[in-house]
Length: 494
Image (cartoon, rainbow, N blue to C red):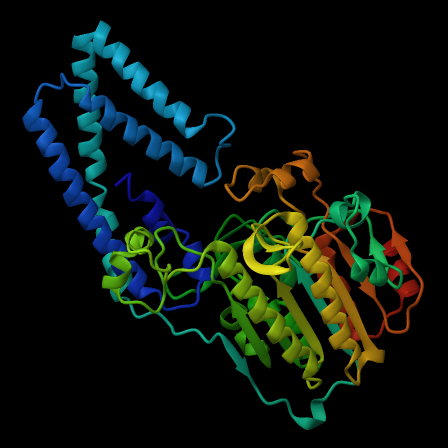
């Protein structure tokens, strides 16, 4: 049970948040995980049975090794969930402590050592009963008929509904005000951000709507703080907002639905959140993706039997001197980025869509770009991703400028949250450059800028601005055209 926790937890967790954020169906993955759970249980049962036959009274130091494996696996799982920092106790140090403590106990207190072994065996037996609920749940999920999500759809917009002005709302995931403008690293050039800054209203003190993308984006789109989320097995979103009770996410009250009610056509190209499932009735154009690797290297589109051996596929490929059939995290991140930039270009070029929402997977860690070589799909740092963000912003603004409605287009640039240094600092993706440029400190302010048509001078709003009010700001602009001075007046009145 413990050895498989990392592979099973995302699927058997009562919240089913990973299921919600994946392109469904996922049945073949659940089937593969269920097979692996059974195989691992049989393997561990055989090993422990042999150990008991060899030492039924718990006298041997082999039990210390078993306890060490157990403790380090539990610790590794807790750290992996993000509840503890790896800087507190390194895995190797924990291993040495467990082995040392067991050896000292074996030398000095043999009777107590045997009792400790008996207690450990009892603990294993109690944990073994978890199979009674874990395996049936995985089997049910493997055979449950999940919906088949559309990665992309485009609906016809009546010719008479063509817009005479546009709003393009661009969310860069994990974009930090501090790193872009306030404390930019020496030698780093961000010309696209600087150019837009010189023609926009910038909010310098934005208070984030949350810490996690899965909660922030629904909050911004709804205009209410979402404190928790879960999904059913069909990928339907349930949230906690103003009350402690779970409720179905009211997508019909989102900014997309409001835009449709105001007569706008709506298009979305987004990352991570399943926009084409949750908001489908109110979208005329939609595309979304998420390729982040699952623990165990399980892949959608593969059979349960292929997924059953997925945890060993990299080892097999390495022994056979072959290529890995599973992309690395930087490669998967780069594939998502390439898809979303292509879709963003398509969506911007489609001038039948008046309200455009883009959610892009950068500069979100881990690093998947090397600014020195310009290569995608390789390990990098937050700063590398930030350089790519600036380049991407330049492409987006160029595409917007090539449209007929460029002179009537308002552009909103924001981060869903800032660079979450405490979260990534305990991750293996954290780099030496990340440590250097962050100083280990977290600045919670995401970036927010608004560029109005024809605006050529910069303005700055220094008063504290809750990011949640971005919803109200967009709603205001959907109802009537705004100007930079009008925006400043509106903020002061809030």
